[in-house]
Length: 285
Ligand SMILES: C[S@@+](CC[C@H](N)C(=O)[O-])C[C@H]1O[C@@H](n2cnc3c(N)ncnc32)[C@H](O)[C@@H]1O
Image (cartoon, rainbow, N blue to C red; front, side, top):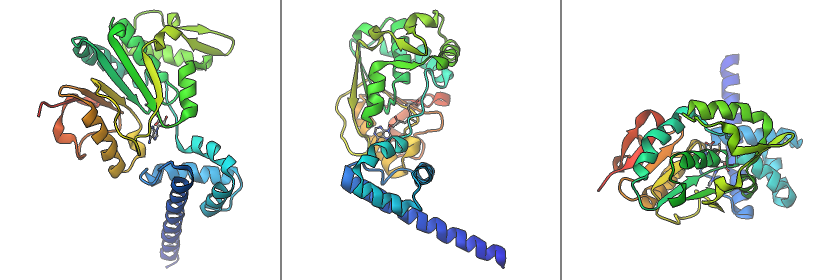
């Protein structure tokens, strides 16, 4: 009986917390114009509860109240919500497949346009830039690297990363088939490494929100990795529809390791190009 009562109390607490979370996201959308209402509650709740504890609020409702009346708090909280974890050549096997199986297909195009959506602080974008360079197709390529967080975009534009991460990035680069000395791509300073400005020659960094904005260009390749996992199925389908309309037939879409087109609204419009790396190719209709 006691165990059952405890279980019911836990369910009620969960229900109340989820309700508070929904109200928090409603308030943020109305007050700040950022729409988190269709994100995965499970993943964002953790971030919200950490922040609640960090700033000494009693519960999510108190945080909502503070965010309404203390706009200065929002930028910091937004950084917490936008979850920017990334690294260079993240999942090296994916970059190996990009190098060997995707870029040779794109090389046949006269002009190559690439959309890197949810690019965070840019580590993936510089990884792509290195592959484009090594494949000899940089000159005819234009990359749009977008994110809805202007703070991470500033860091991406700068291309400056902590030097202690470079060892891991070098290993990733090599595991992804890189054969050049990785050190030729950056200048090491005391505690940071600055990636060569030439790498971002053909890259436009821009603000774009997958939850609220439309598509902006036709592109041959889209990389959107480890972003859809934060969305609920409704928002995943919204973003995927944007990708479908941005790609011509034979256009290529790359998702993250734990993401899939299976069971989504656009799955019938794509073939699997490299199934184990979640690389898809749009069908000719
Ligand atoms: C976990 S990071 C993934 C970064 C990189 N793609 C990677 O795989 O390493 C997720 C990124 O998606 C961005 N993001 C989240 N929601 C977004 C939205 N609605 N529109 C655009 N970017 C979004 C976040 O700001 C964050 O930089």
